[in-house]
Length: 267
Image 1 (cartoon, rainbow, N blue to C red):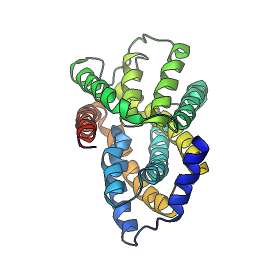
Image 2: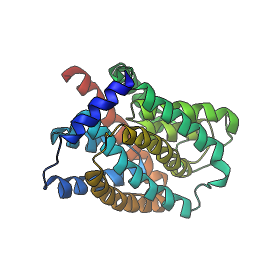
Image 3: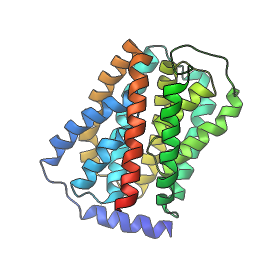
Image 4: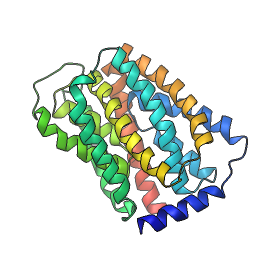
């Protein structure tokens, strides 16, 4: 079934040619999504509707969006790393668990209907928004962890699976669990979130690329915009910290909730 789906997707991709004006237009949109993603996640809230509205088939929109998102997130990850908010050396197991989860999610989606999640995820995102508003832990103060490093591997793998399977809100889930369970301050959690987001994005890109579900030229043009936006967004986040990240996290979580609920009732 999965092989038949991939073959059909690749055949449809071969027959879709973006209009010339789409390249600069979507590159400009990617600047905005890269900025949002670098701070709070949720750039797909803007990019995916834009791609679908311009006529890309859903699987091509997902695959192409993952390419630009991965490139933008790589820029944000590097900026947060240079700011000293996380280290690569101490997070190898976390990255491996996230990659494995995302790879499994991207494979499983070939067999299941993701619409079921579009009813569950809004409830979770509302929970993220309420936690961000009400919890005293959502600032830049590091606190005692509630879950150890090994225990958190399952959480990271689970969010990675969700990101590969469905996606919207994954950045919010990474950040909130890192604050609530691992005790990281909000800015440090946002930095490590970018590393985990990059990991799950790369796993998804691998699966979409194997299936021929990526418009590479368009995706790479969009990637330039996303990296520009991510550079600016990560710069603002490291300078202003939780006072910038916290309200944007709330706004993006609620906006994603509204979009998913609207999609359910209109599709």
